[in-house]
Length: 254
Ligand SMILES: *[C@@H]1O[C@H](CO)[C@@H](O)[C@H](O)[C@H]1NC(C)=O
Image (cartoon, rainbow, N blue to C red; front, side, top):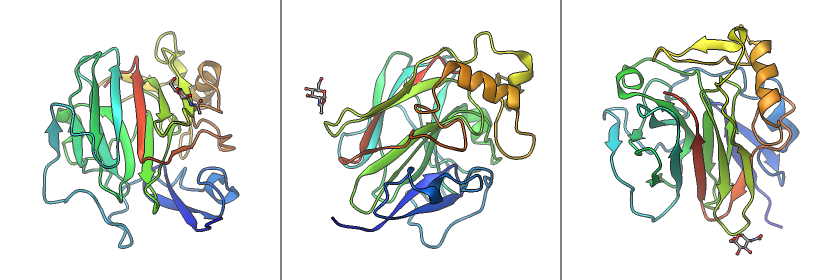
């Protein structure tokens, strides 16, 4: 067995070295209460990371599916809100998305990333997410490409939830993690927080002012095996050896 450190980008700024021979997302080092979970924020560039984008360039809009070559992921838009755009943030660059996709409702785009990509896809709008500020609240569809070209990914509600979804490996293994629930409908008011877009969503469940009502609601609707909800982090992170995932964004709002 070829053993090496596997890096899984967990919740933004930190890269977690999950340890030799342990799949990312399942090692003790990847799952601790401080394992990147509460330590979000704009940390700036990590000199060990080769970024896909340039901070000198404003995020460009992807208005049609990109060529299906190299690492990347499909995004299927099953969201409730036609204003949703999908923003790609590289870890440590929380105030500067790399690019964003305008996927019409009901359609599916392929989005290319570079071979050193580490980041997340989140719902947002150009008006808010291109304002140079940090906008963490909402569901994080996280993933990164490892040294072997495999992609690791999960869906996290730790920083809030603005909709459910699913992630599926496209390497033939068919491994999937899914919570296709309408997360916002019927949520108790004490579980809610407002995004800068003005939309009320499920609040964050880690860090300062972690909202326990939000966590209760998340766990009522979704399994912690499917979505990263609790710090025990059962097993939501999965791998696709071909460097690609298939994501569905379900009943979310910008
Ligand atoms: C994955 O799904 C495809 C299409 O349904 C099927 O042909 C294939 O056998 C599945 N692979 C595994 C490992 O279950």
